[in-house]
Length: 300
Image (cartoon, rainbow, N blue to C red; front, side, top):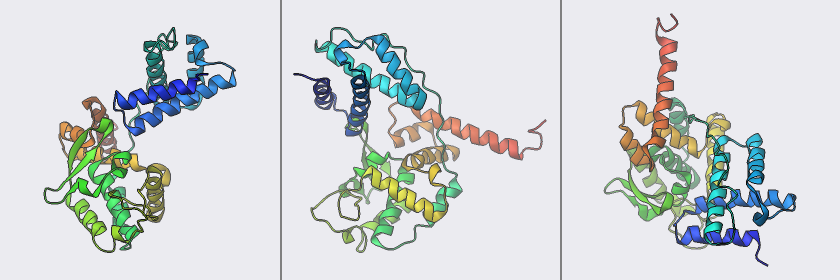
């Protein structure tokens, strides 16, 4: 008997082969759809019997505990899957077609202050292999604004020290070249010198740039743990910092120092400039706060 989960597997295969979706995208789609199937299982229902009202009810339960962006993503995941099943004549009617779209709240990223980032990076003075790796990792996150999945996927061969460039593979396997600043170049060279990356045990040869202490490729969870540990050492609130916060901080600080928004868009790998424009709002917010605090006539 063909199950709903088999249909999900078929959909994910189609996204992989026909659409070339990234692993991170596939994982988020699968997570959203499996959560919906678990909700149906609790009610003794299956996808073939679902109506629009059922989908609306499910999304309403998500709105109680999830952020608007998460609900919007779940809606998109379910629409994509159900649309595929209708096209393949596996479902007679698309139950998501008349679902009211979730309104995504305009949430502004919360970057770290420049002084906080510099303080954190200045505490990375450990010359052990782990210390050199952590310094290179955090310098790269802040210096390029790359996504954590892009950073963990980097190979040593993606670094071009002669040209001062890094080849980054982003969403949809799209590649872009990002510049390597002096601080980042110095940290990477130290990490790749004797006493750095070569000190990690490698049970199997790997081309990945960043390794864990067992010699395997560093994962996203591993990056989170490194950031948490380094924030603790630097006396920074761990709730305010993550790999994505480094990305926000890179963009916001560059715009605050006069970088062209198109340059920042290219650096971050945003398909739409509208995504990059969120960071200009952060800069304006910071400007307004500084003005209110400092200008003698700001309070009337």
